[in-house]
Amino acid sequence: MNKPFPASLLDFQTVFPDEETCRHYLVESRWPDGFLCPHCGGKEAWGQKRLVCRSCRRETSVLSGGIMDHSHLPLRTWFWAAYMVCVTPGVNALTLGRLLKLKSRKNAWSLLDRLREAMTAYELPKLSGEVEADEIVIGGYQAGGTGFSGANKKIALVLVERGSGRTRMVQIPDRKSKTLVPVIAKLVDPGSTIITDGHDGYRGLIKAGFHWVRIPHPLGGLKRGENRATPAADGAVSLFKRWLLATYNRPPSDLARYLGEFCFRQEFRRQPESAFSTLLGLAVKTSGRN
Image (cartoon, rainbow, N blue to C red):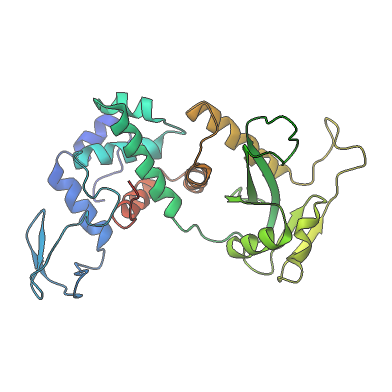
């Protein structure tokens, strides 16, 4: 982006004044090293909205295969939505639709959901050093179900890097070692120190190449004011639940996407320009389900 990152919606109008500017930005995001034909690998093309490869003569578009493909919304609407997502702590479909003056609430929901899908597709770098691990349960009350039990409840693994606060949250089917350890191995550099409470599901960490610090809760459970085994993870959980309630008012049915959105926001919380460029880069490379 040659111009300064817009500090307000008014500045946004100046930086991205028309469809052509937005399309040029997406072309540079999708092909930063120059055009590459998805059909034959050719490096030269002509055209504007539809690019024709000089080698195979087949057409493609910068939007082809991405979450914006087949969308009837103007590119400036997509850019505005991405900007709002990246500069505000939380924005729901109702608020987004009002700001973008969308006539249909369904359109606003679909737009935000596709952006959320792109955020979820982003492969965040691994955590390292000292990493706290804990599990949370999200969902409503079910008669006879306590703690992590109950068909209406969903479980997520929470990992937080001490010092930086970088956060990873992943939905998991259970709290067994065969589930927890492979997920941690995928998200944390080997040799790192994993700090947990007394849950036995982390016993396989040492064999997997990690240092394991286990801090069991005292007998009788924690009391107010006592030190917790994973304070950083507990803080991330509290922040996530407040964000989820304030933004969406209720636990979502598709928890994985909302966990992905939250982690993406946390990763770029002090870098709105990087968040914006990364999100739009994902938007032209992530295949949408809608």
